[in-house]
Image (cartoon, rainbow, N blue to C red; front, side, top):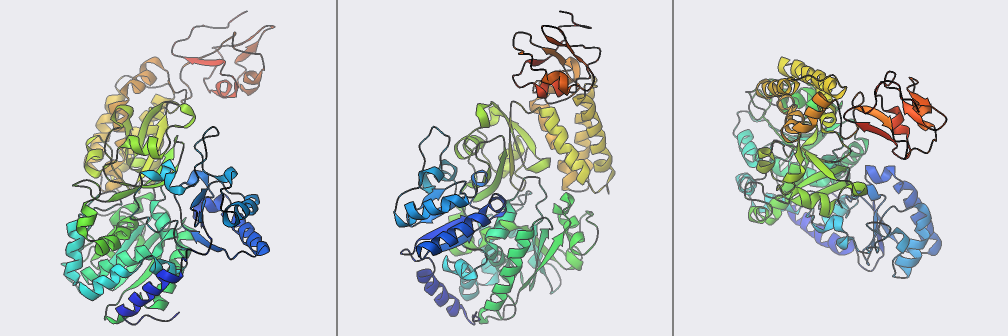
Length: 628
């Protein structure tokens, strides 16, 4: 790998690779090799494709890409030049795909994407509903390039923004362009990146650091992971542009230890960029120096908070600290150096802003939230996966048009946005635009991009308890409001969901939650009560049912309701009796019934019944021992 010595060398290499790398006359398979598809069988599919191509003597270009988004249908692949999109590909499909599509120019119908068994398959990726409303900026190269091949990144225009900045823009010019674009931090807080960069640049001291937050502690969130795994050089280029703008020479990427593929691909990419002369000393012959190192975290959710992250980077326990000093000030950043901290997605957007201009970026999204946002769409939705959409798109469009609606024809109940400390948004607010300010107005937040869809089988009190228990477990315990407040709230929720709730419990939850939000030290504590407060706001009737009627309408909470067996529906299989550990299910010559004196409301019989003959009702229809 020959070192690039000038900006002209980079331009010439880019022009040559553009013509040579993805030649249209060569058949090509772009197969997802992200974590999700790898787990569902990509390595075996790859081996089968390579073996079959060798047997047939086909000159096949196999590109092992990052996450292509449609994780639930993995492994997924696109076959070019016909752009056939295949889902749930198995090793035994390799022969047919090569024969039908690569050699015959026809689709292999068995593996084509289809919305359900009755619908016609959709051959081309651009026509798949999941992708139609997406616009990719941060994920622009995922699904297109091999993240382990720096030449692929350069071939699709990578590092051209760096060349433009070093060749024709001053550091202040780069900073002004990012500031004009109003790129708000995609890690959750939504603070404008340009203002943060300006503050770091104006800090005293010669040494400054550029830090990328790849911790991503939200359960089910994998937005940053997908960039680190599938397009690491876009992250590097964003960090390089930041370093050039603020006058920094050292960069750190903080990655959670549970992301081994991300760490592997980042390390490989750093070595390639250094060898090619895009990292290190005298980059492209411009006297600009910048190096990047990786720091692995232990996976604590609180380390997503900036000061706790810095403590972890320094080798200390991840405790938040009061501010000032801010990270961007002398004495506030890593080892006391002024540090600019943005998350991975934020940095990945920067090269496109410099390449295409701030006005282009401002033309996407909304006035106060320009650009796009990446979401991990999960829960009770047909198409789970990674989506990138323009700001201002509605929740309904994401869930129903991109996500395909709620699974199994169930009724939509709520969507939780913003990770475990986000809010739950009900059905009547589905037309809410997705942007920083609007989500905050309805009691939720953007967060790092988690989006969990809930249906009629979800109990909102139980959901609030689940997310609060996560926040309570992940609390560092440093400040009493978070340490004690979340514990007290969780105790009340435990009472309510086990049939021991009392009048006044809802008011106690609200009062404690508001106090925790006002007085906690860091963002984790400030936002931890959100799931509870929003579910009380929008689903108060469910709380009141749990407390006053001792009933859970979703049948999700044990210890609530009165259990009985519908004799007309029951076909006497006996599974309910086998499941009951307390001998509450009694048998007569003609039926089964539940003895209320023995019933502990554990739900074992309800879950065991294959036809739904076990009923859970608000008030007991039978008292004592039922006799036939």
